[in-house]
Figure 1 (cartoon, rainbow, N blue to C red):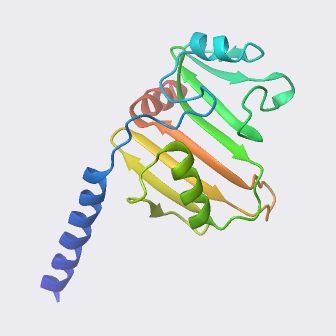
Figure 2: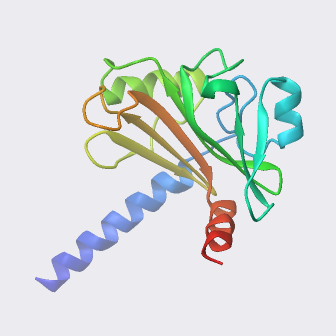
Length: 172
């Protein structure tokens, strides 16, 4: 019995690592200039109505548009957050005006739009697909507008090493 369990674990490990190794993001999704790794200064130059709001520790901050609208980001309906550390965007969540497209079709649509890999996406809960490529993690979600805190379709992107630093700053 243990032999089958070990073989199962090894096969799962190898297949997960094969998908991880085959994953290649030449560039993070570029949403009207918003992308991981862009500086606050570069992004504000592209979107002059955007404002930078530093946090208490002065290393972290948020970028916002007036009235929390999507501003000049024409291809999205809005955003949940655009987070920065040392004036570099390390995480964002954008929202699309789509409450109908099934998750797999939404993934295909966004993969085509942003030249994302077709393979390597893992189911995460009933309404999310995740992809990890090196230090970048992408999550596509679709909640169909059901529930209390719904957003419809969304794309969440984060640079994992910088997120860990930001988390440790918050913990003190």
